[in-house]
Amino acid sequence: MVVTLPPDYRPSEDEEFMNALQLEYFRQKLLRWRGELLREAGVTLNSLSAGGISEPDLTDRASVETDRALELRTRDRARKLISKIDQALERIANGSYGFCEETVEPIGLRRLEARPIATLSIEAQERHEKMEKVHRDD
Image 1 (tube, rainbow, N blue to C red):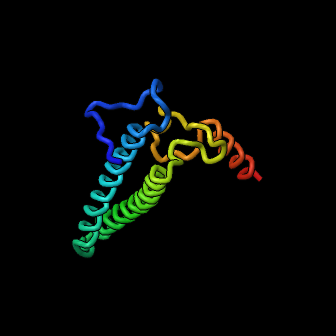
Image 2: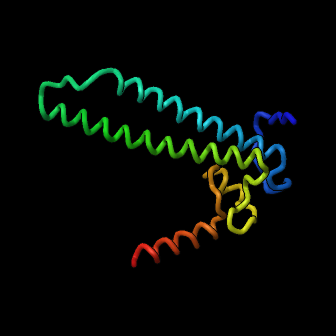
Image 3: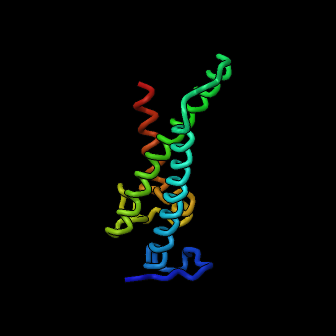
């Protein structure tokens, strides 16, 4: 089933949660985000493969190395984010998107708007973070 979004569509609490329009809205949002990350990764790859470090000055060379290391860490984070976006797209495809993995309750449109890859409701996320903190302090 092909769903066409009106150009100014925004999910609303007044409609059925995760109806076809909302699912298509989040699917498009996730695909755009994924596309941006992939474009940025391509630019990084091109700049990193442009050649070795040819800075004669040791300080300049160290600065270039530091910049490259930072860029690689940023790309690694982007790679992990793309994986989470792919998982969210899979949840859209299988009908589980927008529902908390722990409670199966709706995550909420405002949370999904802010973090479309969210898998937990705010309450479940807070419980999860408290448990992490308790176990981290051991």
